[in-house]
Image (cartoon, rainbow, N blue to C red):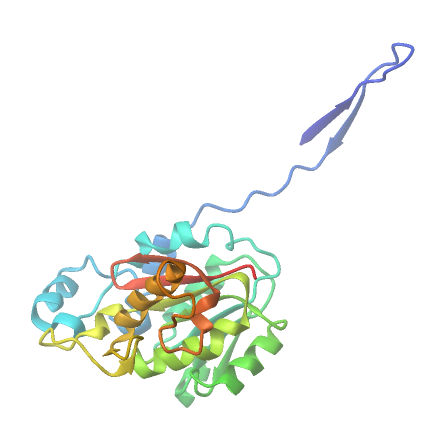
Length: 264
C-alpha cells in the first residue's frame, strides 16, 4: 500500500493518512529471452533468439547471409521496455511463418488490445490465438497496412518487419508503414543478414540515394545521411520520397535495426 500523509497547517490539527492501492509494476519476468526461447522452433519465425545454438553458428560459416538463428534477446528488451505495459498498444508484425512469435509477443505485452500480424500465406491463419488477429495479405502495400492501422486505432506504436527480407519489399514496407506510425513509433527491420547471399556477395537491387543501387542495409546507411542532411543538403533523401525526413533515430545491433519516428 502507498501511504500519503497530509499535514494540517493550522491549529496543530492531526495529520491525515490515506492508504491507497499501490500501482501494479510492469512485470520483469518472464523476460523477453525466456519467452523467445519458450516460443521457438527450429528456425522460421522461431529464430529470434537461437543464434547461440551450435547449428546456427555453423550456418553463419556455411551459408553467410543465408544463415539461420539470431540474438535479438540482446536487442529488444531495452528497445521495448516502455511499451511492454503500454495499455493502448497498437502492434503489428509482418511475417508469421510457423507462428512462434505470435504466442511470444502475446505473452510479452500486457495490453488488452489485439496484437496484429500479417502474412501472405493462407496457412498463417491457423496461428491466430486469443488476443491476436492474423491478416492474410501483402504486408508491403499501403492499402493493406492502412486497413490494419485503422483497425488498430488509426496509427501504430510498433511494427516489426520479419517478412520476405527482400530489399524491394522492405523499401516498399517502409514507404507504406512509416507514415502510419505514431510520433515516437518504432519500425524494426529484422534479419539484415539477408542483404548478402550465401556466398557473401552484397545485393544491389534498390535505389538508396545519390543515384546508387544497394540493399536494405545500404538503405539504412543512407538514412544516417538523411539524419545529418543539414550538414550537406537539407533536401537529401534516400530515394524514398522524403519519408526518411521523419526519422528521429536509428538503433542497430547485429542483423537488426529500429527506426523511430520523429515527433513532428
